[in-house]
Amino acid sequence: MRFYLTTAIDYCNGKPHLGTAYEKVTADVLARAMRARGRDVRFLMGNDEHAIKIEQAARERGLEPIVWCDQMEALFRDTWDALLCSYDVFIRTTEKRHHAAVQEFLTRIRDRGDIYLGSYEGWFCTGCEAFKKPEELTDGKCPEHATIDPKWLKEDNWFFRLSKYRDPLLAHFREHPEFVQPDFRRNELVAFLERGLEDVSISRRTTWGVPFPFDLEAKVYVWFDALINYATGAGFAADAAEFDRWWPADLHIVGKDITRFHGIQWPAMLLAAGLPLPKRIFGHGYVNSLGGRMSKSSGTKVDPKDIAAHVSADTLRYYLCREAAYGADLEWSDERLVARANADLANALGNLLSRTTSMVHKYLGGCVAADISGSPLVAMAAAAVDRVEAAVDACALQDVASIPMELVAAANAHIDAKAPWALAKDPARKDELAYMLAETAHLTYMAGALLVPIMPAKMGELVRRMTGVEPPKSGDWVTLRTRGLPKDRPLELGPPLFPRVDAIASEN
Ligand code: MSP
Image (cartoon, rainbow, N blue to C red):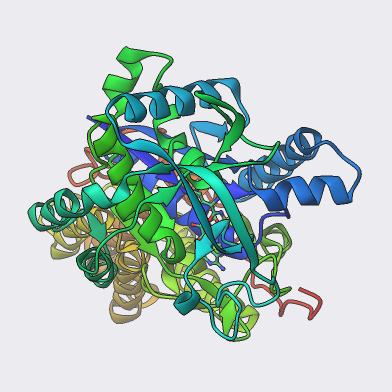
């Protein structure tokens, strides 16, 4: 079965930071987990290039916007590669295929009667690239972009008849309670819908943007253009069979600030174009720093590549999943990251692998051959696979991280309780020793295999040391419940997977 997963596409007016990386990493964990379950995954990421602030960033440096966007693409891809993000498609909204998709989408909506010419004036925040009602501003400023002054804009524009979709959307929310998650975000959107919708302006008199198909003077408003990237990425307006195969999206992962665009405007656009709605939209929280959202404009951004270079990309990925419930905010803290890296990964998991493999070598000649199929610990590990899969379905990434760590804790407790070094002194208890080490090795392996989506490099190495082969890219969990370690292959010894990490110097 296919699974089409997307992240928001990033404005590329500045380098990626830990806040934007949080979204890509967490979505990547879901993509990898769905692949491990045997699903045929298409994971889409990309850059949103038509914003006014991007054109400004380019011109300030004396560059044509497209030249700047080309440079930024390389930089974004480089960061996502460093963070082990396994996207299948990287979309840029300046691509020809996307322009064609936007124009086709607009033409369809116009043909169905939901686009008209009108005029609009109001406060516009270039940080959000959106008009703001006076009541949405605090002391005249957008609460999300306190360093940017909103501008008063008045334009004759093309409008999308969004108001018409209030009732159909309310019905959709009623019939599909899972449509927007977490539930409190869904409730916010339902309350917003109940207050009524106004039509939205979808064109701009600028030079940078997708040309309007039926007005040569106008460009498509960047949000209208950007949302359509999810259809472009599935083959819309280019390959009907491909689009049929991948659309509708199974899951859009987006930040809480843009859940409304995704849960209201985007589905209304799809209804207007006669296309099916995405199955689910998940609004994650923010990575905060010094009490506010980490952002390009607030000056609190942290480069995720620097952090990954210090603690490893796997460790950073684990921390981002484990530290806060997905959907809630995460307060960035170097100290918490280092503490977790050392407690959970160096001590609990890394040390478990080291001591298990070395004891299996010392006491059993390297292989774990005992038949442990009736062990309650094996049953616990099999049940953990079900629990992790349910957590993946619920986007409960903190559980996806913590459930395998329960196996790690159980294995460490088992070693401490059974004291294999004492068993080894008594030849009459040889079988007991072989059995408990086989149980311990099994728990270690299962925890590692379940943590591969979060820590693909280090857990790939753990699985390889224990089985002789790296986990396959797809389908690894399908038989995991019943599979065990090979009985005739020695576990491989190796250097610590997670060397202890030092505090991060303050310039980070
Ligand atoms: N270009 C739009 C999205 C269009 S999607 C059709 C946009 N870009 S953005 O660069 O501002 O943000 C990209 C994503 O990163 C959004 O989902 C946003 O919520 C998320 N984040 C930006 N800063 C963040 C944090 N500090 N923490 C977590 N996510 C953050 O919005």
